[in-house]
Every structure is written in structure tokens, then in C-alpha cells.
Amino acid sequence: MQFFVKLLITNAVIVTCVLLGKRLPTLAGLIAAMPLTSLLVLVWLYTDTPGDPRLPEKYTAGVLWGIVPTALFFAAAWFCFRHRIPFSVTIALSSAVWVVGAVVHQWLVR
Image (cartoon, rainbow, N blue to C red; front, side, top):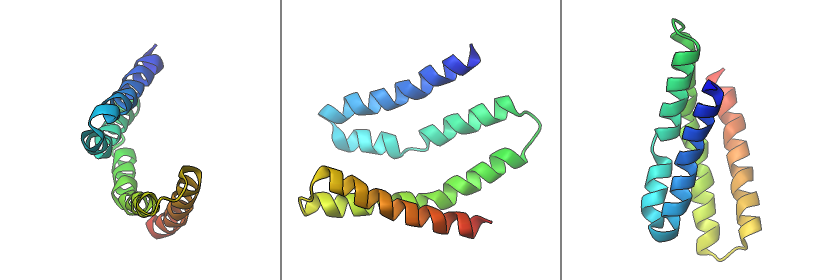
């Protein structure tokens, strides 16, 4: 039951951003960029593994450094959209940029 509550709350955040994005896309982007998802993950980690501060600490470090590849993803997507590159190509290129950033991220945090 606890898993389904987590699933409902997490999906509600995503669906809210999608619905809001149709009317106020910049506000939806701001909400999506909020540490809301990370906050939910921290709460789930804390409640699932009480007494283990290392897990939230390592997760938080991963999120902090993970901002860089994520920013690269959105910078690449913004650049592609500005140059009217087709959506599928934009997503593929942005994802490739993110993957390279994520590989570097994992190498650096080890």
C-alpha cells in the first residue's frame, strides 16, 4: 500500500506539471525544475531506511552534481528548439549530451 501512495503522489506532481504546462509553460518548467522530485525521493529514502544518514547524503551529492548534466540537456534542447530542429532529433541530441554528462558525473563522484 505504501508503494502505491508513493506512486500516486509522484505521478500527481508530473501530471500537474503537464497540465499546467499547457497554459503556463514557464511556470510548469519552474515547478518541474524545483527540487520537488528530489525532496520526495529524500522523504521516501528517509522513511524506508531510518537511521542511515549515508544514503540520503550520497543521494543529495548525486543530485547536486547531477544538476550539471541536466542543465546541459536543457541547454542542448533549447538550442535545438531555437534552431527549429525536429523534435525527435532534439530529444535524441539532448539525451546524448545528457548521457555524456552523466558518464562524466559518475566518474567524478566515485
